[in-house]
Image (cartoon, rainbow, N blue to C red; front, side, top):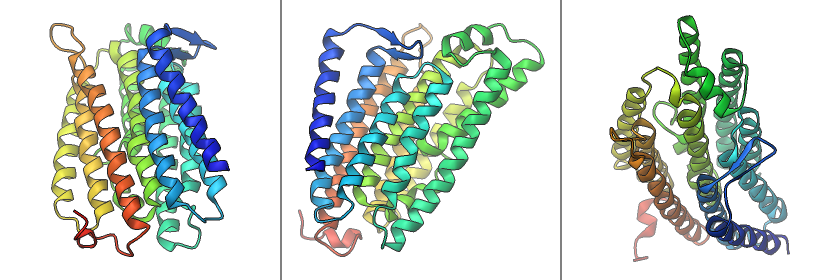
Length: 332
């Protein structure tokens, strides 16, 4: 009963988001949540990913004693992702970050008797704890510089920075890049991804690869474009270098994999590099946001394709004992 109740809730939320996206206007909730087309877009994408994962999990978790907690944690993590996408305040953003992350620790270790799943959960927890610590440091430093946690207020304050204060702003930017980078799986913060995705239940890997990663990008877009877009520091070149390194390493490493889930993991790293281009060049010289628009289009494309790939892997994993590429022989 619980799985179908959760599935129904996701469908209703997705339908409501689509309707509001077409007929609802921009608004603010509690002064810290911005409801606009950006929010509707990411909410729709994240709910779509959650829907695909939930449908796949009906078969993947069939007969498992932890089915009800599994779907409850899935919904809770999805809620955290949506909070991230809508947050225009750093405190609320961090709340969404933890609300998204904590349930995924338990989801990764949901197969309690599987040592690979437990190992993946530990690695994921350690890296996520590191990213959370970096974000707390970045938020604290930003508040110390600007006296506010509201992204628009931060932007106004950073526009007039001079002298040593700019150095602290640069440190805050580096901490935000590192904190978001762990979840976005960009180089050099990608090392945990292949092992975690291989050991975690395949449906959970789909949620991490397509859901949590894109929610982290949504938060990064908000922070770097809205809050730090006015600071007189050239961080675009750094993002360009990170994007190139991520695309190159992810694609090259994927070619050498024999495990299907590890191949998908490295592929997801490469795709993060493509989305990263939108942060490196969000606006053209003429002032058109074509870079950001292209990044958002790739977010939609990536989320659907990557979720489908992991769902297919989950369908095979329930019927075949192996997860190597050779185990897929004869399926075509």
